[in-house]
Image 1: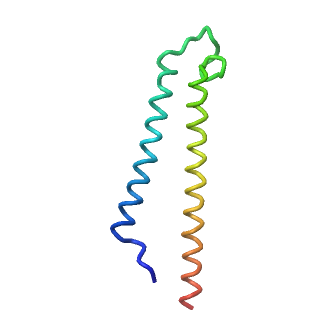
Image 2: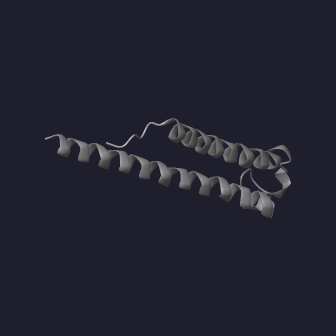
Image 3: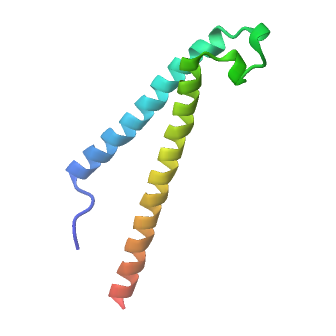
Length: 92
């Protein structure tokens, strides 16, 4: 059986999680500009009419990054499930 819980693997996973949080923080800070400078005369809050092009791109960036995270977590759960099932069948 391969060693999956090595120090290097732990460091890589930690760095990837840190990078993920960092990207969410940056996108959130970029979108705070919209919330701080919202002008109700341009349209309802969170409507595309009240956003600039940059704010719309940040909004979609947050959504796309959330979908990327969802797909990556789904893939990780799939691989773990596949590994557990293969280990059960090998132990019999």
